[in-house]
Image (tube, rainbow, N blue to C red; front, side, top):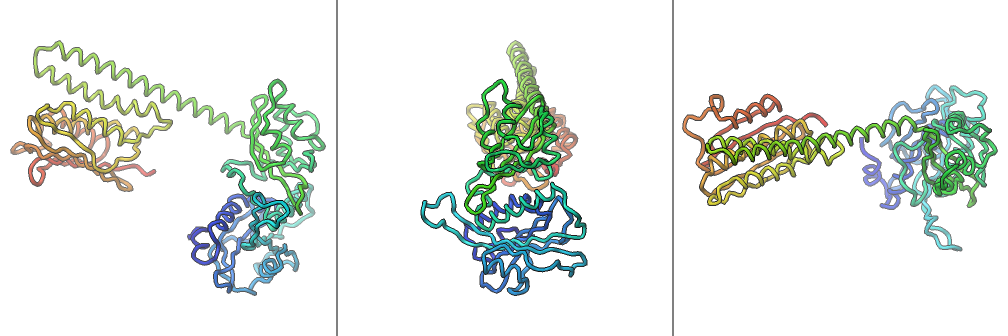
Length: 499
């Protein structure tokens, strides 16, 4: 399905500033849909002026929907929906007409002109920059209509105020901080404040959240800022952001905590007709969410500490092996211990990287470069072999990174010590990453494979380790073949799990 930007660029005359305003509106208009108990459709005039195109749609979470199918991308001619044309031409909210029964259920239609006004940057005494961009169609399913409760009446009045702000270019809030995905919603809890910050209505969920904070008195009639500060900041300095949010003066968010309960507050100032008439404050009890986040942070810190200690232990093992190798007089034994040191070191590199990341994933390019540098260090001085990497591994899970680091260590060490022993040459690690697989080629232009080489029959410990890790642990494929033009080429094909 085309995005809002795609449809706007292709069919309308909206410029970049207009499009940014539309994105801000659509990112936060769930609030208007829920307060209205209504579906919202955003119509923008076509570039040639012959009709309208629907570029966004929102369904309410507080009531039944009217449109079960998506209408985004629908084009209608001018005159096809009179209320849309009227709202656009007369620059006003239109609520005329009887319910529409064409869909089989009664639907009340309303239209709201969408205006972009640079209210914050306007010069005092001058008319603010303004432009009408489109029309919101608000459709309410009346099939379950009944005598509204006080909560519903408060919702509808707040929706009416918010719709007027849209028409005046005061919503969304210009220059406000972006709304978080986990911001409170209408159903989480709602408070309505008057101009001085006193609570005129508290929904049951909002009242319950304040009860958990320790409130024993009635919230209605109380000054929200002072009441919240008394509950949460009795023995410490008051959070200034709280007072701004709780008074409803600015569109901000904050969190308060008392007695182990954490409550999130979001303020929506209501400014109609040029004056602030009050505010809405959305409330959400996020106690369990924050507790789980703290548990995850503790778990992540513990895992990172474990990786750090494993890295230290591996480095200790490598140091002991290196010390033992120096004491050996038998060249074969010393060489075997030095190989073991490099294998342990490649695993230590992975754990060191994991100890600095919050997730069990690593940027493998850094690990590969360090493994390649280790291979360069063991090459003979006269050989002057400088391995290099071509392509990128990207981010890999730890269960892939650890065996792959060991495989690269073995292959590079094998190429340096056998294929390129005592001779200059070129050694490359060529990487190609696809959506579901990783292709790695370790290529050298050295002496090549011995005659009659068979991977299945090879007695080399290093190649046995490579085959076991690639085929057995990574479920990949391994091929070792002569390189065209001389040398050896090892090909790894490693499947990647779906993201």
